Image (cartoon, rainbow, N blue to C red; front, side, top):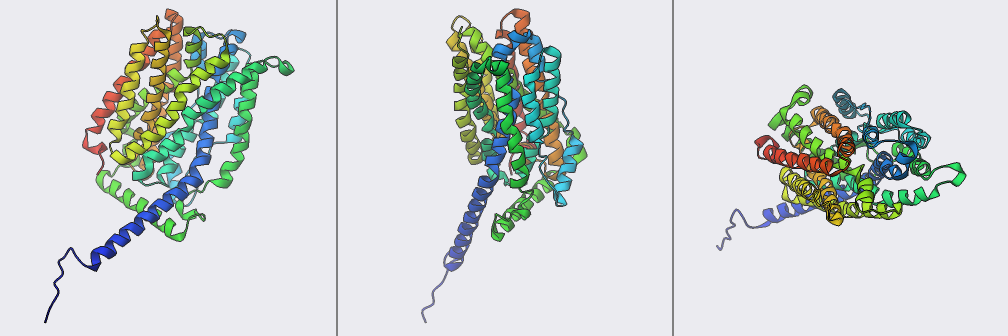
Length: 451
């Protein structure tokens, strides 16, 4: 009798296994696409408007500062005078509420945010400028860390960098589109007795009010509540996220209290400080620096030059997010753009005799800052989950955003002190290089490497 012998690696079982793997991969892909299409566009629009309302003051400053007698130091202080309402305890409560079936996202009051943003048109001097910026900070402070936490409840680790990239593409895009639009709005000067910078605040604040009403209707709290996913998609996503949470807890077992004082969290906070120092230190001053260094009188031309590097930055942040997911080395891929951007800015800041070389350095630095975000925001969830992740993200955001105050003020103070923005820009470059070196050191430690 002729008997056929099957080796352990042959026959139908591997075929069935391969088919199951393919089906699981297709299910995971369809779930990702469904969640991304549903959630990311509105979140990105919210962040686009939030960031625009914070930073359009840089374009308004082209005429507002002289009209109101606001000095460079006062402007640098005012653009980032904020009261942060998001504290670590609130982040933990947010996550615990989500786990019990409540909302996971600290949804901002976008209607109120828009009203305050438009209300900046009423500024009449340095004191009212400070007050307007404080109120704006109160309205929007909880949005960004809330969304970063929200994304961890919807997207597995293997997809998280690209998702953060798509979400944060709103940052460079808001400048790429907002700067030229702001330049055009400045030309409305005198209409109905309002200055151009007043029209800028009013027109760009109104859409934020309208979007606020869409957030509550469109965003779903958790995957189990997503009627727009199939039962198979909901179950698959929930199982994947639960498995990742369990693995992270088994490896690190970080509690909320430990996350609050964790050396890893504090170290990442310092890295984020360096990134934000570059983002805002450069972002709020780049229109004024370009106008003065290139001696350009037309404010619209200035805003076009401001927009150019941020158009490239939009593409860079999306590409870099996909690269981080493919390579799986978030620390290294965070450090590279930070280092390149910091070097470019520090070196070209000396090129005052060649203004266009300085513009090139500004552009490379802006692109580098944008590209560093996707990899960075995958690092906290690599060693924290649940309420600990909420606390850790809140701490990192709160400490890092101190640079949002320090960066613009520092550049303004250095500009007033030396009559030139060069040394302020060099400082930004040095801080970014230091942050790049720090994240490389953190990435080489076992707690921050992937399993």
